[in-house]
Image 1 (tube, rainbow, N blue to C red):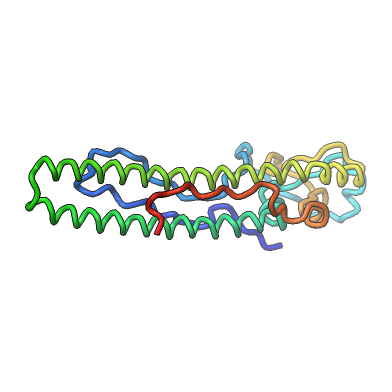
Image 2 (cartoon, rainbow, N blue to C red; image 1 turned 60 degrees about the vertical axis):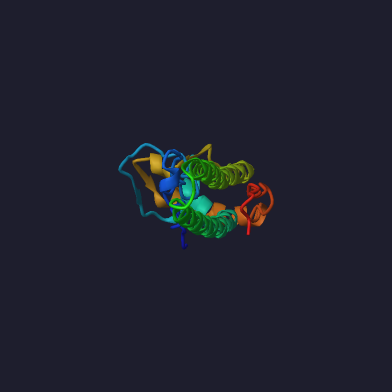
Amino acid sequence: MPVLRTGLGLVAAALMALPAAAQDATVPDIPAPEIPPIATPPVLPNSTIPSPEKAAESAPILTLDQEVLYLSSAWGLRAQARLEAKGEEVTAENDRLTQLLSSEEARLTEQRSTLPAAEFRELAESFDIRATRIRRERAQAVQDLNAWAEADRAAFFRAALPVMGQVMQDRGAVAVLDRRTIFVSLDAIDVTEQLVAALDDRIGDGEGVVPLPEPPPSEDAP
């Protein structure tokens, strides 16, 4: 089963450092949007032992891989595709605004020698405030996208719980554990693939369950 992993290679390029006229502004670099990682289990050496399918017919414990379950499901694949597309939009807008600020900074630099010091200082301060606002808006856009990815993943697991419970009962088990927290287990008790198929059938891709965030309004839209 092909698995897309976290870390989608989305590079929402941070706006370039504020120009010389705006060096007093202090705004954190813009992080890249990505699917937040599933809660990391304890780092344990673990493995599975090949076994015949009938060995798990009456197993009281079943296992699954949460990350594989999410990223291989129709829901997770849809979320990754949406996140990648939105990440590219964020990158493109960051690039556009970077070029815009760079051009304005160049024009301001050209005016420096022709304007009275007080007037130039006023223009420089205005530019500094605007550049800071733009960077904060872009940082908020990334934060909103990451928050959406986390909320969408949480909604997936909430929707998946009843299906997991049904599979557990059908197999006569009493618990389903994340296999990454187990030292050794039989591969026959792993129900990840079975759950992916059941979830795709029962809950689908989750389109619209958690609406995508609207981009923040900007006075600098083209």
